[in-house]
Image 1 (cartoon, rainbow, N blue to C red):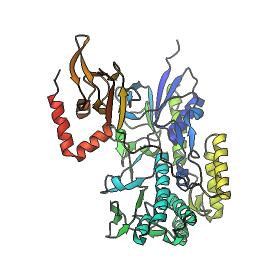
Image 2: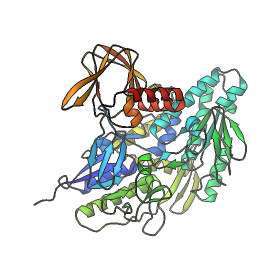
Image 3: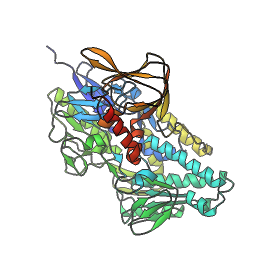
Image 4: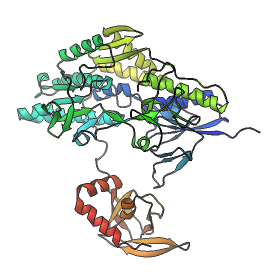
Length: 531
């Protein structure tokens, strides 16, 4: 008798997650295991190229590859991971169009959820600093920079224009260096298209807490990089860091203040909340794994890869949170899952790295390749060649190469895209008899009746019984949000009705910011019948 098909869940659609799914497809027969990948988006983002999205060197889709094309035999679930139950081997994902949270069971689990920007330790950073980790972050920053240029071109107050054209980047690791270099080149080049902006007015400032930039590189290469950036007008502040941010300025630890309109944070990072809540071994803020990349305490059925993992190579060296290591971790994990299913020998992670590359813009880069340190134009060519070859799929390679060629021949399109409004508050229309929500649904919104009537039903002794009729101006739906429980009743439109919908995120933000708003809904919930 053949063994039942194993269920493998891969959480996260970054380099490590997608690579794991791809390798599992190659190594396992369809009858051996079913692979499911859970990710918020249905595409893989090539994150090292995000600074070029900001500078318009490549198009909006130049950094992405469709996951379904890369992993044709993997089931893709486009949801957020909300809860991981390691004991019962269940993963709960967010709701979709229906307010229900599905649960997926697994035999083997791969956690590749990466990390998120953590601005909570610095007052004002969450509200005023722009994170830079995702494609959405890059697009938002791109739109913001173009708007700043448009506003500065119209502004007649010299001091305010100076504030608009000052850009502060926090963190001088690889991400910070690549971003500030691209941003500086782009804004200075774009200035010639604005009649009332001069290149000299543009000010890009890099703030780093350490004694030198690029601490991951050799001191000589870091010094070269610093000289190149300084030559192009970038101000570098070392041994200092941001301790506060407002809409007007960046406040430094040593007492300095930078008047600016744009603050971009590339550090620090932390685990996603769902992994912070996980009851398991952690090390230095990441999930602790052994040399086989198994989660300590859950060997044999849970593996951790990528930025969220803390592990050592077989030689005892810590594995850095870098894409080149994440993809090789994924291959090791896929081998070990196959070995577990087939009762074979597991492989320890042994990759120590081949080198490091850091582009500096302006056809310049620094590199340490197999112990050889080089700087200037040659490593820039190597950098582009390596990244072009690493881009998954020949069609995406061609797309990226075309974008780079067009950028050399023609100036970028200074176009701002406005895709959606910031608030999720919206209006909805329901015809007579239509259901607004059902008893047992997840509470995701509060409703106010603008026009019409709605009836509330509760399930009692197997039958839906009417308990209230709500009219124009009345609210409902707040009880599930305040108690963080499922809906306790079903609501249907009695007459054609227009409702104002306030999503959970907006409701909680207003409730925490305006005490009277929260008090009103708390009192309203207490006045509702208990059953």
